[in-house]
Image (cartoon, rainbow, N blue to C red; front, side):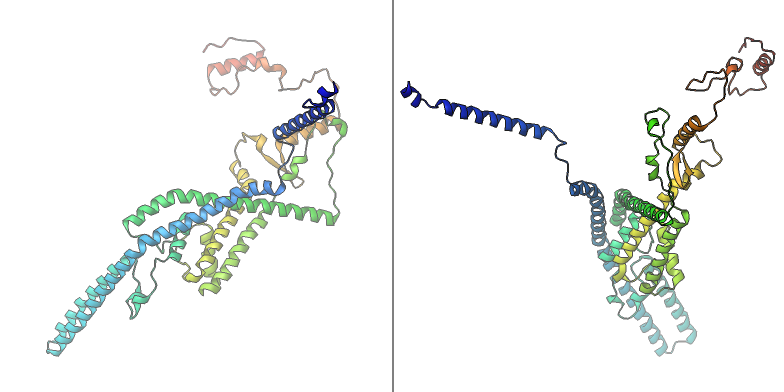
Amino acid sequence: MPFVTSHLPYTPGRVGMFARSMHQHHHMRRRQDQNENDITQRPMATWKSYARIILAHVSLIVLSVVYVGFGAFLFYQLEQPNEVEVRARNIERFNIHKRQMIDHLWEMRSSGIGQHVVEDMAVKYVDNVTRILFEAFDTHCIGAKHLRPGGEDEDYNWTYMTALFFTTTLLTTIGYGNLTPVTGRGKFLCILYALFGVPLILITVADIGKFLSENIVQLYTWYRKLREKCSKQKYSVISNKDDKNKEGDLNLDHLENYISIPIFLIVAILLSYITFGAVVLSMWEGWDFFSGFYFSFITMTTVGFGDIVPLKREYYILDLCYIIIGLSITTMCIDLVGIQYIRKMHYFGRAIKDARFALVNVGGKMVHVPDLMRYASVLQQKYGQKKTHDTIIVKGAYAPKDLSKIRFIDFGALASMESWQSLWSILTGRTQEVHV
C-alpha cells in the first residue's frame, strides 16, 4: 500500500492542496466576475466626468472654427482669381482711354482746330471716362486708390484674412456688406455655406452665452452669500422634523437655485463691454469714441449697417474675437433677462394658464406658485385658527352645496330663452327641463 500511494500521481496531502487551490481559484474567478458585472463599484474619476462634460462644448467650438476657416479658404479660392482678372482688365481699359484722350486732344490743339471744338471733344472724353469709372466701381473690385499711379500694387479685397472676416460676419448674420461674392459660383456657395453654417454658429454662440450666464449666476450667488455673511444677517426656513413625512410638507431646498439677477447689472455688463470695445477700436482704427461705440452697438445687436467697418487687416483676428465674445455676452444678457422679465411681459394682462410654472419673488428668492401655496397651507394648518363648524373638509376640489342649481356654466347666449329659464329656476328653487 505504501508503494501504491507513493507512486500515485497525487498523494493524499497533495490532493488536499490541489482541492484547496482549485477552490481558491474558483472563488477568485467568481469575485472577478462580480466585479465586472458591478458597474457601480468603481466610480468614474472626477477629471473624467468633467472631461466628458467639457468635451461636447469644446468639440462644438472646434467644429465651428474649422467650418469658418474652411469656408474662408473656399471663398478665397473662388473670388480672388476673378478679382485679379477684373481689376487688371478695368485698369488697362481706363489707362488706354486716358492715353487716347490726351493724345487726341493734343493733336487737335497742335493742328490749330478751334477752341470750342476741342472743348466739345474733351467733354465727350470726360463723359466716357466717367462711364468707365462707374462700370469699374460696380465690379466691387476697384476703388479710387487703384486708379492712382502705383495702384496696381494695392492689396486685393479678397485675401484669406478678409475671407475669414467675411465668413464670420456671414454666419453670425451681421453682414456688413463691404465684401460680397460677385461670381456665380461664389454666390451659390454662399447660399449652401450659410444654410448649414448659420445654425451651427448660432448654436455655438448660444452655448457660450449659456455658459457665461451660469457663471454670472454663480458669481452673484457667492456675492450675495458673502454680503449676508458680512452683514451677519441670518435667514432660516421654518421646518419641523416631525412633519417631514406629512403629505402637505414643503421642501424649499431647491429654491436656492433661483437667483434673481438685477436688470441694471445685466445692462451694465453689456454696456461695459461695448464701451471697452469702443475704446480699443478707436485706438486701432483711428476712430473717435462715439464711432467706436456706434460700431460696437450695431455689431452686438447684429444689425450690421456696414457704414463703419474695420479696415486694419492686421487686427482682424482680434476684431473677430471681440465680435464672437460680444455676441455671447449679448446672448447671456438676453437669457438672464428672459428668465425673469420676458415671461412677465408675455403674460401681462392675460390669463396665466400655466400658473404652476410661474415664479414669484419671495424675500429675494424665486419660488414656484404651487410650492408657495403648499407652504402657506402648512403654515395655516400649524398656526391658523380652526373654525368649529359641521362641514366635513375633504381633500380635493371644492364642491359647492348649491352645485345642482347651477345649470349652465360658461353659457354664452345670456339673452336666450334657456338662460332666462335657468335664472328663473335658480330664483324660485324649481327645476325645469330646458328644451334645446
